[in-house]
Picture (cartoon, helix red, strand yellow):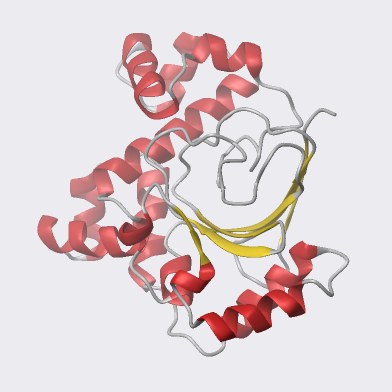
Length: 248
């Protein structure tokens, strides 16, 4: 059975995406600057921000052909809700019980089992937790928006009124890595979207903000473990574990 991936915007969690993957695991999950809350095999897990390709289905309990549901948070939105800096979860998949008291997680897991649509359960879990948590760092959305638009780290730092060291420290807590790495990850996602649209690699490099086609190839290899051509050949609209953008 081939992998089937579906997603929808969350009406309950601003900026979040609810997704579900069924069937055999697909290709690797690629860095996208996001963090995910997962429901896998009756367990609540957290997927931290990635800096490299992560094998699809490699989460605990996420074996072949097992359904996985997830709530993907916008970059910088998850740490306040989870109560842990993003850099502590970088490139990791952990049980939610490692972050929250185990009895609380057991009660949440029992509640999750009652949902026919696990994604809806994850939304309500996150909404309830957000009501009792500090709001996300307001700086995060401004930093992510500037870097996503292709602005330099220096320009973003000037806009938000922080020095380089302060911006780096705040970015580690919010995104799991510094602003330069976040900028690379967001630029990668811009490039992969253009590749999926069938644009020539030279045009992808120009529109995504790379110096040239060779620069594009180096960055795709470094962050995604593949080449633009191989990605274009392997890409299917059904996506992988967390869709074209990655996530869990």
